[in-house]
Amino acid sequence: MNYQVIYSIMGRIEKRVRFIISTLILTTILLISTFFFFDKAWFFIPVFIIVSYLCTFFSILEGIEKIEWATLFLMPVLVTISFYLFYFLFPVRWLTRIPFVTFYAISIYAMFLVSNIFNVGVEKSLQLYRAAFSVNYFYQSLVMFLFSNLILSLKLNFLLSVLFLFLLGTVIATHLFWSIKLELYLEKQIIQFGLLVGFIILQTSLIASFIPLQTSIMALLISCVFYSVGGLTYLYLDQRLFKETVREYLFVLGFVLIVIILTINW
Image 1: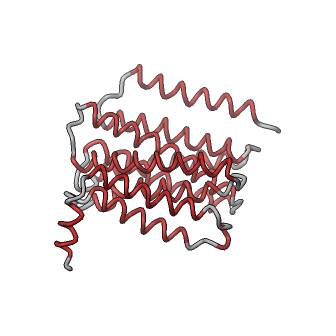
Image 2: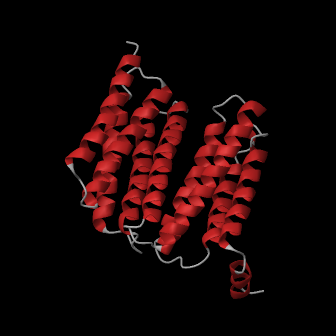
C-alpha cells in the first residue's frame, strides 16, 4: 500500500472525527505515562514528540506546505511535552491525574483546531481566525510558563537556564508573529522580532536570577513578559498598536510586577 492510497483512506475520515481520534490517542498515552516515574520513563519524551507530530498530520492532512511542516506542528508538540513534564511537579495521585489529563485532552483538541484553521488560511477579518489566534496566544503563554517552571525547577547553572529560556522564547515568539500573515516562509523581520523577544526574556531571567524569587513566581514573570512584549510586538507588526492596547498590556505587566515585588523575601 503506497503513500497515496494511505492518504486517500485517511482523507475519507471526517476531519472532526480525526481530531477526536488523535486526541484520544495522545490522551491515552499521557494517562499511561503518569503511572511511571519520570527517571525510569524518559523514553516517553521522544514518543510524545513523534506521536503528537503524526497525530497533528493525521488531523490536518491536506494542504501542508513548506514552513507549515514546522509551524502547524509546533504548538501541539510543545503543549504535549510541556504537560507531560510539568505533571511530575504535582503529587502523583488520582485527584490530580484525572483533572490534569482532562485539561490536556481539551487543550490538544483546541490545538488541532487552531492548526487546522491556520492551515486553511481564513481571512484575518473573520471571527474564526481571531478566535484561533487568541487560543493559540493563550497556550503559547501557558507553555512559556510550564516550560519556564520546569527549567527553573531543575536548578541548572543560571547561565544554562537563561540560554534555554532565550531559545524557548525565541521559538514561541517567532511562531506567534508568523501567525499574523500565515505565509509559507518566515520573513526576515519575523525572525528578527522573535530574537528580540527572546533576548528580552533572556535579560529578564538573568536579572531575576539574582532576586530571591520562588520558582513559580519567576516563571510567572517570564511568561508575563512574553505575553506583554509579544503582544505589543504582534500589534506593531499588524499595524494595530494603539494607545488603548498599549495601556492594557502595560497594566497587566505592571500588576504582575507589583505582585512579584510583594512576594520577595529579602
